[in-house]
Length: 429
Image 1 (cartoon, rainbow, N blue to C red):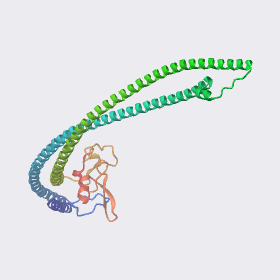
Image 2 (cartoon, rainbow, N blue to C red):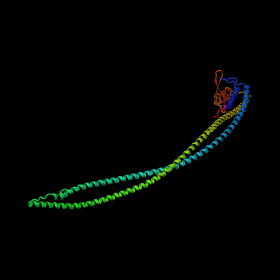
Image 3 (cartoon, helix red, strand yellow):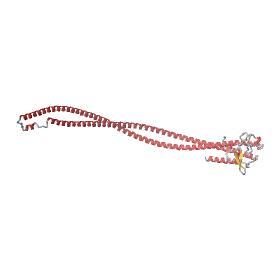
Image 4 (tube, rainbow, N blue to C red):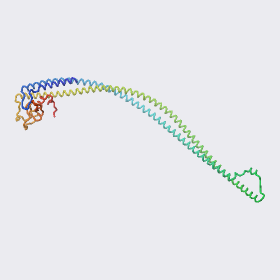
């Protein structure tokens, strides 16, 4: 960069020298005052000599820049090789990491499947056990409620039976005097026949009632005994059936409980296997973390190499840009040399004739060859006094002590305006 800066300063100095060399000795005024032929010839020879020297300098600088470009390309090629090697190492590490992650994912998936199956089986067994327990509890409660209902009905029947027995006893005269009491009583028979007959009739009626009540009581008792026997037999059969069903259910639940216990043992084994798999997964995760740390380190190194490569690329771009600028400047100076040669040839030709051009003698512009036959007055450069079109003399420079603007052609404007851009360096429209 320092070399390019020095080349720029050197080039600027040469351009200033060239412009100062080609600067006219007398200022331009509004009148037509052509410069002497000797000054023009001397300025032309100096500009041609300076153009040749600058071309040689630019060729030398171009050779140096090309060598620098080749050196930078060699460095970039070596850096690309280093970057490629680092990329291969990173690709291998990434592939190994992906394989390890794939194996870990497969192992974790298998472990999760085993654990999920064990958990689902355990949940299913717990649900079945709860279901059977609830069913047994419901059936026990139902049977207890049924037994309580039967006990209440039996108590009601006993109460009704007691009431009916009491009524029957009252009706049958069980509360009357017993035979012993009647035996112990004193027999007091009346002396009158009517009273004796009344007593006999009364006793006869009582005896008939007693026999009828006894017969009725026997029949009712037999019927009740038969009904109670049937009810007792039915209750006994129902009780035996309920006990048998409950016993079968308890046996089934015990069997299922044993199966569930064995499956719980299997689930415990599965949990142990899951713990072992979890330990392996932790080990693999630690290995992956170590590999990730290594990959991170390699990536940091790669970033550093890429940063260096980017710096070299930026430097190459800057040098390429400077090279393009130098080539552009070289092309501009080639154009300048050609233009100066053309101008020199024109000046040499003009040495043999008067520079002043009469308007009726010139029909085309001296710069762009456009027809100016109809223009009156025809535009003229106030420095070289040639006739041009309006477009070719649109540039102006200050002249005279009052610094009034004077129209000049592009070539004269380049010679007079030291700070302006040369006409040959302008982009074509």
